[in-house]
Image (cartoon, rainbow, N blue to C red; front, top):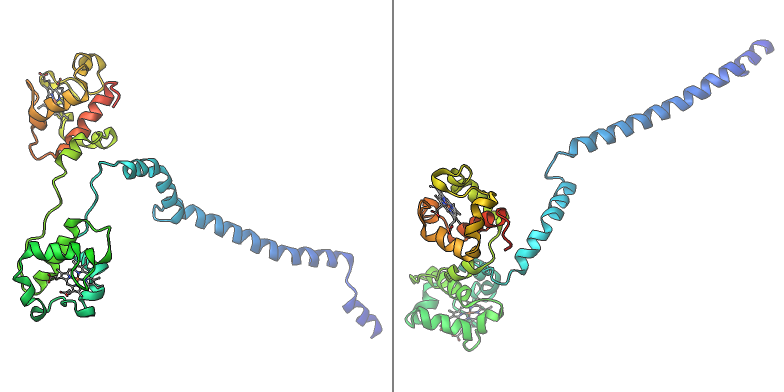
Length: 262
Ligand code: HEC
Ligand code: HEC
């Protein structure tokens, strides 16, 4: 009896080694599998453009361009719509009728006021009147933004005012520095058909010899001729709908490709 008991409890050195190795193997296998899993997940995510890391990388890549755009003083301010201004600035008083403000979508509140006409209402909204603070209290709003909010509000109460469009930025865009990087796409779509091959005597893009005599006009002279047309070159490359800013960028692209400094 004593003999068999001793056999049950005493392990041979071999058994000890086997059990130790087996005991270690299970956790090691688990760790190995977890590492494989994590690596697999990371690989899966790499081509995913929506992952946070990819978005950060994209932001970092476009950053200098975005900063330039922000610094460009001639870039027109993007003006908010009447509804956007109303929701952000005017609604706090004009929805509940706080301080006696005429309420949105309430004809009764506005009948006496609409008769003053759109211009006077705009003037009162810009300058303020009695409890109504100038520009609704937001001094950053442009006249156009206030005018749009007035139309949005007054039209909800039965008026039919036409809100002003953005001020024509024509002069600003043409005098703004052309952007050859943006011009490449415009060029590909509108100009390459002639300027890639040299059809009809068009100076080829990037062919410095073909451009050298023309370059002396400077970017402005080239832009002018591209706008109005010259010889075999149709006005705006034949696309009358092309916005001036796009044309400027395309000319800027051709100018830069020919070695010009913008
Ligand atoms: C702090 C509250 C407040 C805010 C914010 C506010 N208003 Fe007013 N508004 C008033 C009050 C009060 C009146 C009535 C003034 C009166 O006739 O005595 C009024 C009146 C007006 C009128 C009528 C003026 C007239 O001649 O009858 C217009 C138009 C107007 N507001 C436009 C706006 C616009 C646009 C905004 C947002 C950009 C705005 N308000 C934001 C309180 C406000
Ligand atoms: C139908 C063919 C055609 C298309 C499309 C075309 N061009 Fe041209 N372009 C020409 C030809 C031909 C000339 C040479 C004109 C000349 O000097 O006689 C030219 C010349 C030019 C010049 C030089 C003008 C100068 O003063 O020497 C510029 C700049 C230019 N093109 C820009 C553009 C741009 C930008 C576009 C696209 C928006 C465009 N072109 C599309 C045919 C074309």
